[in-house]
Image 1 (cartoon, rainbow, N blue to C red):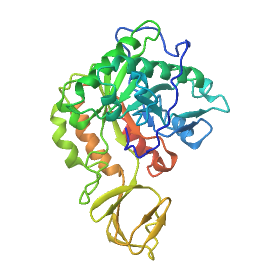
Image 2: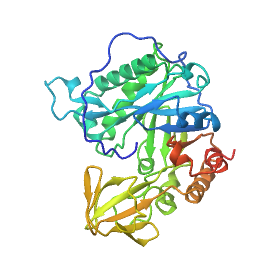
Image 3: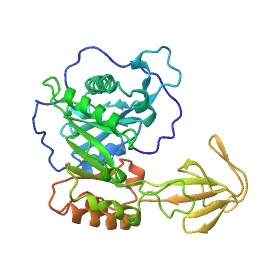
Image 4: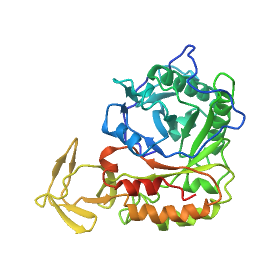
Length: 359
């Protein structure tokens, strides 16, 4: 769901064997009540943390939790279909105080699996195998980590016209498995703005991603995270989109590094206020005055750094426009993503306004 800048591919064997389902009873039409919701996109979920305390403070009823990525294995050890892709960056769940069974027990957890386009292409024609492996691994991870309040799985993929059929086949196979009495889960998928113009995927519901709305690698962009001018052209199809839609809004910021007008990468903690190292050119644009070591790279003299944020005023303008188009459709609003430091930049009232649907 966010930009994947992790280049390490970790081949983790798919968990196998029978495990008790962590879902509820089978439902022909899955119930999906409106709830305050957040995405969790880190690789460690510690229930004894400031992040988790925010769940209770803002009465979060649903957490979309990224469980792992599915990536293509560039060095498969044999030619078996199931070894063409591997899970990567799996989440680690720490619950030392058993809060998942106590004060967090009523929160609904939605496991999310991010699928790269390379993985989707590698499994073309074998989407049923991929679906089975994903569902089995997610269920076993839920069981092992004590995630009991689970009744939905979400697939996150930036599918394109050329990969649409393969992704839809994956969705169809996954939903067939989830609808069996062994699970009784529903299936959702993320929906990017440009995908509103395409066919509706065979899922029970979708989450419209109203972030990363512009081109982050464009050196002249004002704010690629959220910009009303980037969003507006896509929304003419929203009110008639034939799928239950919830909406996710950004609550994060980042720094974008450019060299000779070419995008180099993402940063988040470069000290741009150090006047011996950076000079401000515009409100959110800085230029490096000298070579600067930054983690495992060097920021070169002359490099440009653009700060992008998710200002409440920008979110509110876009949200008002979307709420007008969804005024007759029940939906939930979702924060992307749960992070104490980022969410501390908003007042409690601002967070409540983002989450409210105005219904």
